[in-house]
Image 1 (cartoon, rainbow, N blue to C red):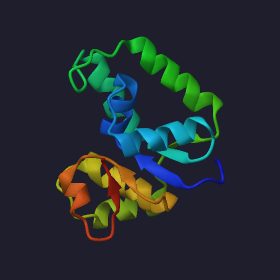
Image 2: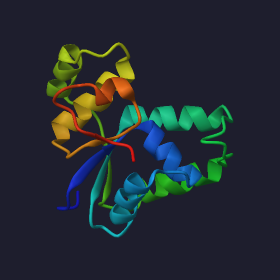
Image 3: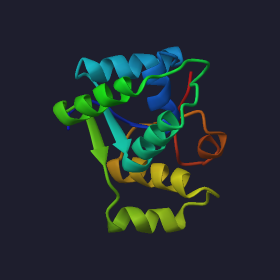
Amino acid sequence: MSEAEAYTADSVAILGYLAGALPSEVDRIFRRAEDDKASLIIPTIALGETLFTLLNGRKIFGHAVPLEKMSLFLDTLESTRAMVLLDLDIKGWKLVMRTDLPELHDRMVVATHLRANSKAILTDDEEIASMPDVQTIWN
């Protein structure tokens, strides 16, 4: 992983990136990662949710996103050090158990963020944003 400041990307951020429809600050962070000046932690659950959403043909912020963009994103994950796919380890799953959120995928994103010690989660999820010890960015 790059030595730059790290952020954890939720599926909404990845989808917004693929659709070219990110809020300005989140877009700036993705651009910094493209330039290897920031690191993006991609939780495996967020990658799965992103793929599932695209396979179902859902529009993202009003934009159709072709599967080819997902293929390019996967190629980028495979070839760059600035975007890292991260699985949970046992300590991460223990964090999932202790995280007070109703949805499993949200718990997994938060646990990945905490295990990676990233600066913030890039998400518009209000439940994650309401957590007292979790910083989010969506502007």
